[in-house]
Image (cartoon, rainbow, N blue to C red; front, side, top):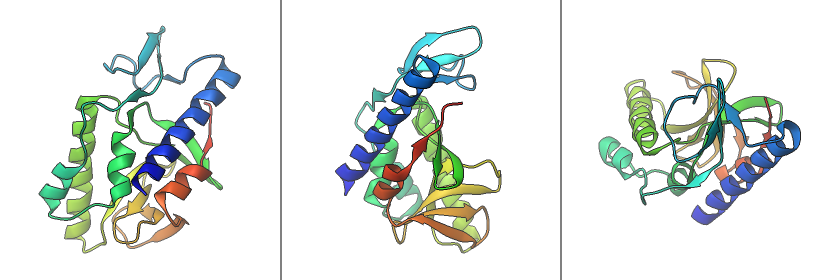
Length: 182
């Protein structure tokens, strides 16, 4: 399954970049990442950065999160966060608009791990089953997450037990995403 998640993420990223090349005549652009160092940067324009995905290096995984929380994470979670450095990628899953989160650099990967730990600590405190966020949504109170118990991808209302299954696995979720060029 690990390699399936890695391949599905690489395939989606390629579809995302191809959509940008076709619709915007270039690499994906991000205003939010302007001025933030990354191996992904192709060029910087007046107010945005153009980027392309880069292999994740050095070899790493989410074992720091596992140690901090004393839990084993879904194998696909490790693959999702350590396949590549890339910008966040707007997409849709069915009718659900979302922005797929990615690590932009080694420093950003450290921040992502800290945020995952904070998310898991809050869930533990609220006696909620553990999830790992994968994407944001237009609703600030909802995120797309990987359920660490079932491996399902869910839309969850933050701080509640309210969850809607979007896909039975991370691999199938990534395969079904449609890139959105903004």
